Length: 124
Image 1 (tube, rainbow, N blue to C red):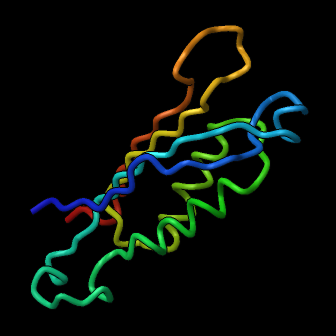
Image 2 (image 1 turned 90 degrees about the vertical axis):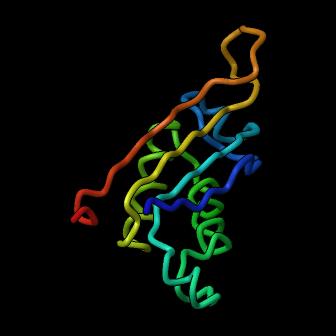
């Protein structure tokens, strides 16, 4: 069985950008996260200790997004690294970070990065 926990449409004001002004003023970002995690035990036990607590995951996302960075790629890399260390049983992570209204002179919904990580250490 493959099981996932997801957090969708997390909104943050963050200071991520190549330009110094972006790291001072900040911008709006939306984070979508889908995490492969074995929660079969929790299906039986009904105990949060047997699964990945999404409130704890949110705390990690919020912490990473609160740090100034030059690149979304760097923030994404930090996020998947910290989640993987905190929860070694994670089998995969799908992450999308969108910068709303990026300073590029285009009328757009946003620009961003997507990352798909597979943890080979959790595969049988």
